[in-house]
Length: 390
Ligand SMILES: *Cc1c(COP(=O)(O)O)cnc(C)c1O
Image (cartoon, rainbow, N blue to C red):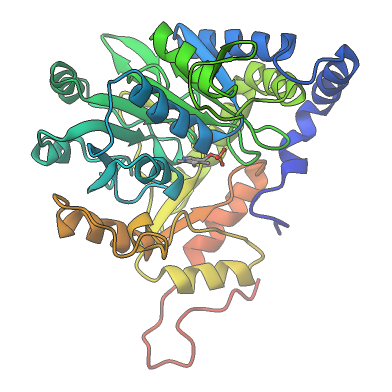
C-alpha cells in the first residue's frame, strides 16, 4: 500500500537533520536574498554541472523565460523567429516561446528518450529558425552531438530544459557530460517534486557564456546591472536564501537521491514482465536519472484503475500535449508536420508513471508483481480489467 504518488515529507525524511540545519542557518544569517547561500549554491551547481556559470532564479519557467529574453536583449534571438521544441514536452517549455513573439514549431519526440527526435530537427530548419529547446524529459538525456554541431554554424541556439534531469548525462569522447552543460544555456527547476527539490519554488540557469549569465542575472533583478541603474525592463525572478541553503543539502546528496531511484527503476525493469506494458528504454551510453518511470500501455486507463484498486497511485505525464491545451488550440505552427503532433497525442493516451520517489525496494517488488497480474479483458465482459483482489 502506498499513500501518495509523491510525498515531499517522505522524500525529505532521510535528509531532515541537514535540511533543518540549513534552513535555520539561512534564517539566522539575516540574509533573505542575494546572500551567501545563493552565492555558494550557484558555485556548487556550476561545478556539479561542469559549466562556468549558474544563476539561481525563482523557478524553472522563469529560467526558460530569462534565457530567451536574455538572448533577445543580446541580439541573438528576434521576435518573429521560430523555436523548435518536442511536441510531447511539458507546457512550461513552450509558454516562454510564445510569450516573446517567437513561433513554436513542434518536432516529433523520440519514443525511447521521450526527448526531441534529433533527426526531425534538420527538416524543420528554415531561415527563420532561431533556437531549439531540448527537454530532457523524465530524466532521460536527449542529445546528439553530430546534429548539435550542424546547428552551431547556423547560429541556431540550443537551450536545454533540464527541469527533470539534473545529474543525467551522455558519454562524449569517453567522458560523462552532464545535462545542463551540453547546449548554449540550460534551465533548471527545483520545484519540490523534481529530483533536487526545494521547499517551495526555485530554479536556475546554467551556461558557459559569461555575457549570457550576466544578462540573465540583471534581467532577474529588475533589469539592473548595479543598484538603481536599470539597463533592461526586467523582472523580479530571484531565488530565496532559505531555498538556496536547502538546495545545497540536496545537491550534495545527489548520489544518494539518484541511487534510490536507480534501485527502484532496476526492480521495475527486471521484474515487470506483463506483455500489456512497454517498459521505458535503457539508453546505452547515458546516465538516466529516473525523474519519472514511464510505461506505455495500450489499455492505460484500465491499468491505472486496476493499480488504484491495488492501492498503487500512478500519474500521467502528460495526457494533453501543449498544442491541445485551450490556451493554444489551435496552435499556429506553419512548418510543423501533423505527425509530430499526432505522436504526442498517441503517447498521451498510453503513458503511465509509476511511483518512484521515496519508494522502497519492498514496495517496488510489490508494485511489479501487481502489474504482472493485470490482464485486459475484451469489452464484452462486465469489466474491462481483472479486479485487484489483493
Ligand atoms: C517542472 C518543469 C518546468 C517548470 O518548472 P517550475 O519550477 O515548475 O516553473 C519546466 N519544464 C519541465 C520539463 C518541467 O518538468
